[in-house]
Length: 254
Ligand SMILES: [Zn+2]
Ligand SMILES: [Zn+2]
Image 1 (cartoon, helix red, strand yellow):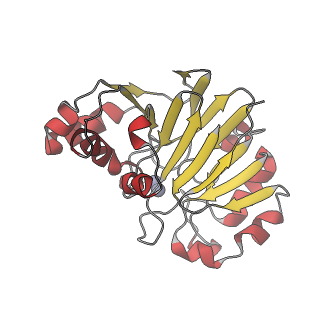
Image 2: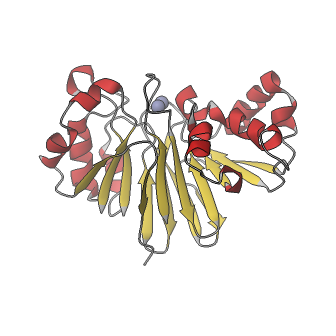
């Protein structure tokens, strides 16, 4: 399994684009979240974005969803020949309504993307088989009403992506033993809010979850002025990676 962090930024404009992470596992090419800039980041990095088989949305904030339309528009008009391969979009309950609303604005790009498009809503606790031994499971997180985290598994590889979340020990317990915990780390202590994490909170959750590696993403610029690694090391002794756009790693499947 290979993870590439395409977009490690937030609503706050910076060199980091909005949320988007690519998981390649066997025949499955899964994009998790699709915020602004992610599609062009894939073009810039030489990612075969037409090869994406699945897209999983964690929640409906614009910094996680706005490039969904960009992706479908690119698939129809941004490449020759246009995409013909099927695509499945997974997300929380309400995903179909979100796509229907995009379709009201953008018309036939979404109503008729030119290839078979399947929308599958996943309730918290629900698991979907993506094929070739890859499964995905959703878990409720405290951020917005619909927000979920995802666990993607193939063989012994288990990648947990928190999406956006507030501090929650139940999420940490659920993530226990993951190979990689891809965790949001939005804000420094002095800007802490209930529905995002600070480095100290990430440290406590990682101490509970004990992932093989901790990969951080979703940075509002002020948090990057902190010594994130040092704060987290007070609680979690494993490897901590402050990911950048385009950072990539292999996760052992056996
Ligand atoms: Zn959010
Ligand atoms: Zn966000």
